[in-house]
Length: 439
Ligand SMILES: NC(=O)c1ccc[n+]([C@@H]2O[C@H](COP(=O)([O-])OP(=O)(O)OC[C@H]3O[C@@H](n4cnc5c(N)ncnc54)[C@H](O)[C@@H]3O)[C@@H](O)[C@H]2O)c1
Image (cartoon, rainbow, N blue to C red; front, top):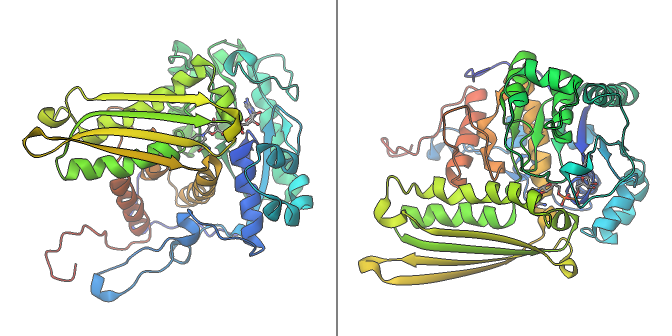
């Protein structure tokens, strides 16, 4: 459903359950982070919903409330966490294994974290070749597995006395397969679930179970969980907001910060070479060329869309864009991404920029999970459904309605996000037009 200016937004009363298919490094860093922030032991750096402000009216008005005061978002104290994994480790054990957070942040919340135990997963080895877990569901068909997931989420809701649910896929990257006939329509997909069609991936079964139950769903991996006809049809039918895909963190975040700047100043680009070394389980899964292919496709689209070579052939036609990811265990979750950028300036003189970002993957991803959970819940209470393009800000490969190209420029994405929030609250949009001196 479309955006109505000043829409009625149902209040965020009661508790919100956050469902996490995949409880590895990102999911546990998110959960443990929220628990630390709730106890005022740490700060939610990187989260727009917790730290961001939004300007209202003219610059001269001096009105810039916090986003959390401007909108009725769920409070951190009202969040409950549940999820699935192919390993039975509780969230504390999984966080220790992931090695992202130190004991300073894990010890004070140990019991609370350990109480979160994943439910058995829907999993198929063929879709994530480098993962071998036994904590999985058995079912007569893929339709039966979807029903079992639906039972899990209803039980969670009842046992915890939750009012609403939202789901964020934090599971592994599945192998890349082109969409098949089974994905084209909801009817074909449901028939495929009953026939256990091999083209239906586990991540799609989670998405189906959540959408059927009216639960907003975001896809943190490059998997094609929501991008095909059946998911958009079901989201519309059930009135559920969806968003994806692939969290925009490390290197792609840097690209969508830098490339808009080069284009704004009309600097030419000969090539952009990017490489990553990464030692966590995500890196291990991406060692499989088929899973890597999904990630590569998600990373490669960014520059093309920002630089628009069809509009600026002299500057950007045929630039070389190479992306590599190497699994290198000593680094764990502390990834290193190198970029070499070959630019061209006035009279074609060449220049180079080298970026070496020593980042922490899950530290960058966790605030995204939090914001998506709160914003998707808000979207549902505001009556929005289908693809939430205003959340493109968070994605490496933003979903768009059919026929539209995605917006990758981080700054346009942020403007779109904030203007959507203003619109929902009946505030004037900020255009930066400056027609009046104080606009
Ligand atoms: N960390 C980042 O910066 C970042 C950025 C973009 C995307 N991602 C994506 O987010 C996802 C999570 O990343 P991570 O670093 O936490 O990886 P991780 O390997 O630590 O965690 C993924 C978890 O998902 C589980 N899993 C796999 N298939 C499952 C299934 N079918 N059902 C339930 N659980 C399943 C695995 O057992 C694992 O525990 C990955 O797909 C990754 O590509 C991460």
